[in-house]
Image (cartoon, helix red, strand yellow):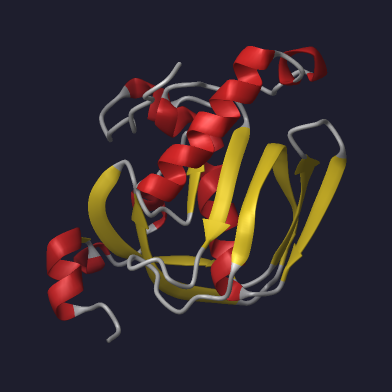
Length: 178
């Protein structure tokens, strides 16, 4: 399980609905090691989040970590490294905002409409229930993006204005806010 690699767009696992993590499975050393590795690759690749399918495991688990020093998403409000098992959006704000998204599995960016706030429920890595009332637009966006991965949905599927799709390096040159 060491040295997990990020699964790239085109791999069928990214289009499958992930299965729930059982309490028994959550308690295994193997799954806990996977969660450690998933966290590591999120941080090392400067992601704001990552979902288990992006590391090749078709299970409902995500990592969210928003670091204000992350060059991919600079000056964003900190969201400490958080693992959520079987996450589910239980409430979305009616207000929708379009903003740039990228993905560790795709070297593209695009403008994606999402709810600016949401409530997410799930479990931590020890099986304790957790709830996040996400009022920060970016944090809510990251959670919704990662949970989409668990349903086989890529951010590219949500883009309304297909003309906004651009390669990462071109986005940095022309669109990234300085």
